Length: 311
Image 1 (cartoon, rainbow, N blue to C red):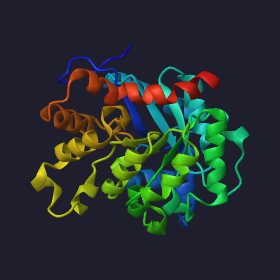
Image 2: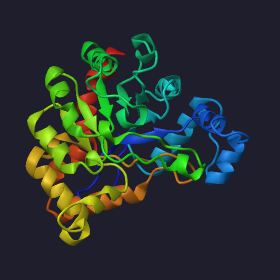
Image 3: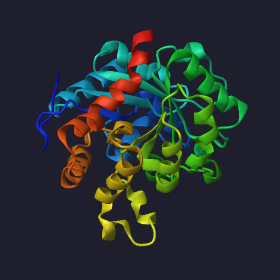
């Protein structure tokens, strides 16, 4: 098993949040702006254009994880209808990747197209629906029937790639509060529900939800810039990420936190600085090795194990 050096010694790191920006994803972005091509979009962003075959992109990510001594990662197909890209990646490297895929439940989708997906990813604010709407409920019912997880983006939603390309982001934050998930999580207690970025500005609400619902998990990914919204003082004045971890651990403990980086593109690749920042914060607040192993890998593998077994 691949292990990564850490303050606690070797860790088997499983990254819960890596975007798989496929060639199809780039082509879809380019199609939204007249005159823009995939190649021009890559040049404008300063990103390396992904190869056309998702297996080749998976190979690049596998090599990147090897370079950073990362054991495995959840790859997120970051547009509805692109689930075939991440399933191809998992077929090519079944021991390295889990397949997460965005679904817009307001548009046609079938359980058959998600038969190899380990977690469905919902973005209610992006697509303008409530998790209580029947189409969204169908996703949770699918997850319950097939032993899958559901990832639900809450809070502030900013898609940097769209902003850099001058594409509009007409999102609706009325649908972004983690509290909306309370009744849903209770209705589907067997479904692991992952709320990324500590709730992305709804930290208090995410903690309330997770405290009441043992099937709710928080992922720690991204730069967590949402800490700027913390009251009554700026988060950095109160210990920044260390304080966020303290509060989360106090409410839900280490077994329902999932380490993630929000890595997404090349040439940057795997976002090592996020790992280092989070490891440092947890080490400085006195986390022991057993809990570090849980957060940085074991928790994700545990909740996704049933879906791996039934594929």
